[in-house]
Image (cartoon, rainbow, N blue to C red; front, side, top):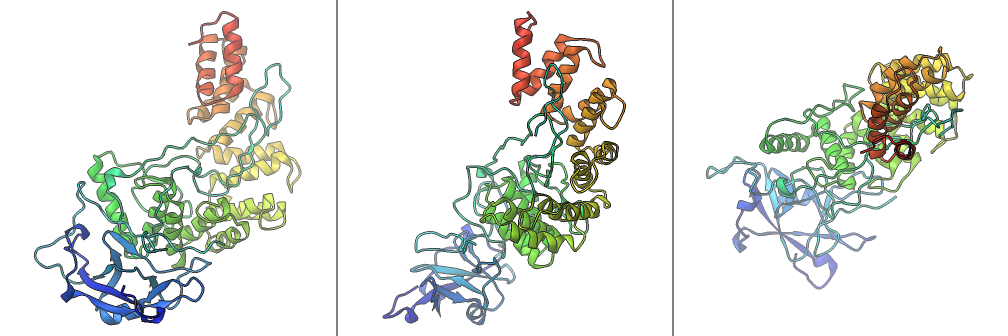
Length: 492
């Protein structure tokens, strides 16, 4: 961009490049291929920008603007929608590449080898030296027992499918307008984050437990046709090349406007799977799907606002997006709406409304919603306290593998709440949850073996299960191991 006597005289240097040619194969610009387009000055930010219409008037079949391997996206307003008319930020003293969709010549072809970068779409410039995204921000109840057991759980306040935030985030924001990858795949950061486990005892009140854990890379994008679309396929067992090709396919599909692929790519950025974790990039891709009316994208936008990941936390905006998806029948969004009513976040607390929305999701077979209704009956929130009814709902969820429901059923059987006391049944249900890594279940199994309840007393097995729980930070399990050690029991 050349500077004249006034801001109105600023112009941006542009040249056309073929979409099918890898960015790293494109030679530097030469004077004969450079065109200039007038820029405009934003009255609020005093930053220069270019109207997209001016670019497509100058370049037939233009599909995106790029600086080296970075795509310059359209600018957005406070509500994350594109500013109209469409525009991109200008870059001073740089020749930007206008990517045109034309047949590849000279036998050039698109490839995704490991030894070079695959681009991924992102980055509106904020200043002259960096390309950044332009965003305007907007229990436990002790049981009466000699040893304190972990009892019925109420889930931690997790209302979305967002992962626990990591301290590692990308310094560059990615935008989904056309999507390509910015770093070499082999250098992507895989971030391990601990699972979120509740403390012992007390039914777990859930907002949404769908994703505190790191998830596998999806083999198939989530579909808005599947209201339980939070489920994900297993990671490919083939070599890294297959993962890279899979990633490339998702990028291409998302770039072509496939809203399921856009949500899948947003999930990857949210969870830091295959790419560096970047909540703003996740928001960009989710928003792209949501703009097309995709319920999964709308739910995911709401989830990021609910958790404050990549955007300021705002329950009112979260509710707005949850409702858009919920009114399309998206079960997870229906549960999330109910959770906000349950806790009075963004709306007045209303147990009746919470139950109404939980039922909508539960009737679609949503295990988390079934579990949450069980908690309402366990606690007497908006309904008469009814342990037998709670047990029915916990069973519906537990039969789908919901581990906290399995744990709660174990507690009911152990203390005889809503059912006849049955230690053997308690052990059976604790084992189901413990085998999924549920810490409180592992601890309670250790207690049953230590006390010989429902099983023969076995200190060795007690130590085994206490150790599993202690390894995950359970303080009660650590105390039991110390007590057994003081009794002369061998503790590794």
